[in-house]
Image (cartoon, rainbow, N blue to C red; front, side, top):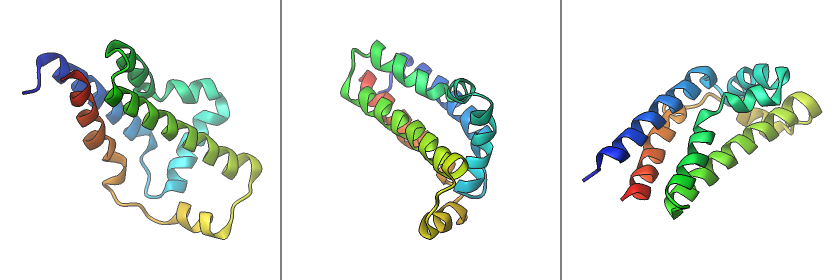
Length: 130
């Protein structure tokens, strides 16, 4: 059974994740990158502040004494932000895209993709608490 503490962490995470989804959601990965680039171009600090689930993952890992599930959550969130930054740099700064990458970035994405974190991350939070 999930205890009350886990439910509170899950609810907080879901709220933060919905916030991130709301400002990043687009019909393609390129659309998502364009939305993210607006904040990144102003300041990388602003871009990082707009990723509250990353800070949640850091604090949660510390609070759970670096539980393996919490560390997996932190690793995934770190890889997610690093990938976003690398793609933004590649597309908007260097302007070096292969034809294959261009096709991938412009392809429509499934409407479920932005919400995948709402399935995976609460499971990791639950495993970390119990």
